[in-house]
Length: 548
Image 1 (cartoon, helix red, strand yellow):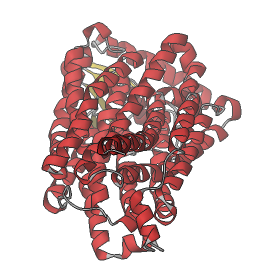
Image 2: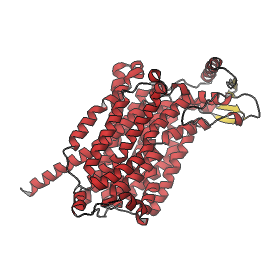
Image 3: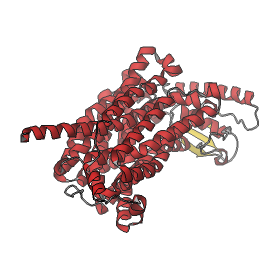
Image 4: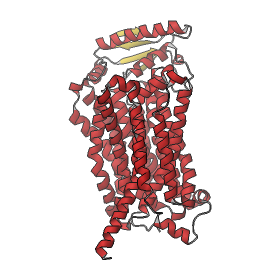
């Protein structure tokens, strides 16, 4: 066979490796973005009894439960991948992941089976997250161990790109299904369809992966008898490996987790829940920006092969740290200028005794938030209205809107029927006072400056791309072959799964507690800032390292 024929065959094989490995990432992000995009609808089906604000927080915490399970899956599947091989392991992970996603579309809601419904939903999220714990590391390693040394960044960059493809696919399916059946039917039962359609992705992914062979580097160490007998022990008891894991975790992985979820998920939540932009319009804007950023993942991954991984990742961390507050403040003005104007002209203040105010963050949904302060804050948070807090020495809480006061009821001594009636009366009075002060019930689609919104979202999207695109190659290059699956996967899923996955619930809880719609942004700003400093000072450059 000629050299040109050999090169063509090798390129074709490499293409299959990239497509097969990327399919899992597409699947992973398709699932997570479906759940995230329909979270307000899921809250009404599974957590309605907890109240609007707490129900939404519980929905986000259920979303985060999958991320909580990811490091444990990384430990389990990382050991399996280092002991038995890359291919077999990620065939198992994608199967478990796919089944959990599909079954979520069949799950009865709380109206049908009561409290069992949210617990079953949590169980499916945990199972899905556990499987993902072994998916990303296996895919990144499999591609990197096949790729030429000088194209390792460009090759693994396609895996990073596939996350955005999963987002586009998820938002696209939601938009098509929603417009085909209408908003009412979609909110009633149509939200299940995107989950059920994941079965198509599962079949295609399995079919492609079954065509693959084992990684050449793993076959080499297996043939030479160098497969690790205890990858966990070797990864976490070696001082050198442990130091690298810690630097990677604090430097690039926690930062990547919060920056990526800030750019791709929290922006969507902010547009829908805080700025009250229509679901379809919000999805279209985020999807458009994601399409625009797609070629940048490939370019920035290729660039890291030329100038190094660190400069590209540092740029992403720096931009995210500096841009997060001004970008979200300008988003408010561009998406809902009436809200921004009303907040400036007639600021809302909750005046209440501090002892009557709770932090409305209940992990199990059993707490009752019925004080006058809690009722007032919950109503304002659910309406997406920013407010300030002012301490009062005694008496029930009241909401001051400009010069007008709206008294909030105290439900601690009321029976459930009277409490429901009192809350309804308060909501009517509050909405009237807000409307009189110029606060809009929802964003006016004709007033949205879409060009400006796209530019602002693009800033965060490019920061996420710069940090994420070269990351797979950098992680592979930092660890030896015989413990690579374990040493890479565990810190990745702690950083991305815990720090990134808990971003939506944590940020929203901070907003609910403070009344400041921007207060939750301190979380990603601080984490990415710390990541920049640690990466700059301690992370080694790896793009010229041999990984054999």
